[in-house]
Image 1 (tube, rainbow, N blue to C red):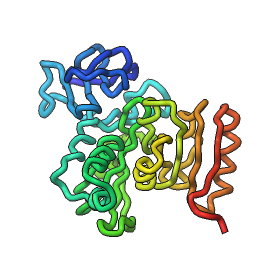
Image 2 (image 1 turned 90 degrees about the vertical axis):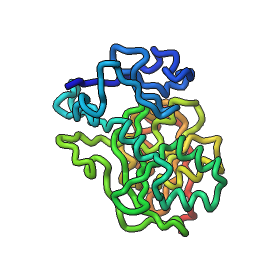
Image 3 (image 1 turned 45 degrees about the vertical axis):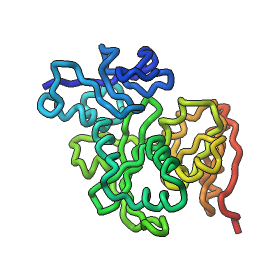
Length: 266
């Protein structure tokens, strides 16, 4: 079996094998290669010539086993090809149908590419919100079902690593949209809902929008990547205490926080 691992230093490669510049770091090379890896821009995998992915790539390529990590508490990763398979346009996705009802096709297409909005067959019309860290590693995917007409969330939530039944998977979540943080130095806006982050990015593009996945998802571990950045928190109401708790931590790390509420607190 062949085991390929991604190099965390993406900037050492100047361009993707497809010919596009790697200035934005969207091409993730395999360790020991400059022209083999995965490109998040063109959504293609470039394997070494001796590898036949459908036969020779071990399951360690679909995720990184906890036992293989050299650092304690390091996460497992889902192979980007799994993410790519979820982006096929011919599968029904209720959230995308809702977005097409409020934005034109070009904008929705850009949102799908930007936020890597996937589709799952776990439920008919389900959406996958892939959690991709700042290094481009896929930590997991949050599977949710929405109403196609109203865009409201149904009471159905699951996780990609569980649906894929990956053994010994070491889950360590990151912010939804974290992979966008390295693209610019714009202020960061964090909301609870992944759907809210996606829609807000259209109306307020002066921010880089991400989501915590709920007030309980605003953890110290997720905030580590925000050190030194300007961060705006837009929580749902009734979470003021939770936000103020993390306000102290971020301020100690030189983060300049502007606190807003999406809804008026009564």
